[in-house]
Length: 271
Image (cartoon, rainbow, N blue to C red; front, top):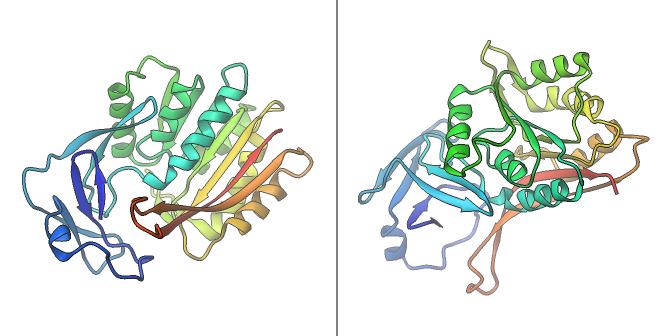
């Protein structure tokens, strides 16, 4: 059970193997409940009252819309706030406005965080709908006039062309799904395709590059394995790689406040 703005939602989460602390009537009063279907992450929302299709939320200067999607999520991933804070810090610390590439950018919150901090951002996602939502969020945030490029294309295909063109970036964000399809039917499989994509990212980093952020949601992967992948691709560059797991934490009023691990990350920074 989570609250986003004025609305409380209930979503299934396999990582939660413990019982609820709040009484049943608190759960029954939720504004929207996701009923899962047989397929992974698929299902439908059951509404209890006038819940709108979208409503505005904010993180720092980024403004975006929550949406009750058909795959359990709300068109953003709240545990990524830790990475957003890290990205904002890296962009502001760069000095001159860096060029940032956001691959699998989804609805664009990370892109908006970087743009608000002063970066020139290229946002890439294979979903036309997701790119449309990202552009809408940029308008909501008052960032539509910033140097933001919106690209609807397969991430691997776009990045391979960037490498051939000699286009380089000071920062790259890589947040791939476990499985996906590009607009021309390209198939993405995390375990088979990620090492090559990380290698291409390393080639696309400029000499004065400042960061590479890799995030993944697959249960069979770990922050440590991502860190080794990043370290190997960036061998000889120096810098620091940190890694770990992102989690959502219960309200601090709960003692002890329990945490739900939701994704793994590895982050390289230069200095």
